[in-house]
Length: 111
Image 1: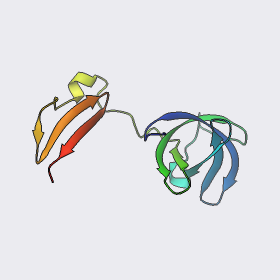
Image 2 (image 1 turned 45 degrees about the horizontal axis):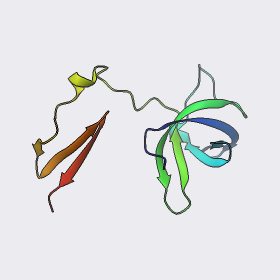
Image 3 (image 1 turned 120 degrees about the horizontal axis):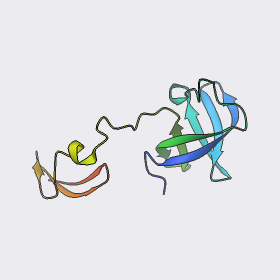
């Protein structure tokens, strides 16, 4: 499954009124909405151009990925150790940190 923030190669197929239609993984149609389109090296992506994109979400009913070309997943702390404020086993307002993987935290929420 495609998870949010996954980096993929996006091939631009056609411009739309509200964004860009293209494909990933050879045959999987994907979309970039206008507010998530960005310039690549100062220019708008051209038809047929391959650009790096990241998954925002996947529409469940049609399994359609929506991507961003913007660099919104950058961290403000390049050092992962400095960025992490919690460790496994910490209790956070009715939630328990179960696992930390990279920049993701898996929580167990109290019912």
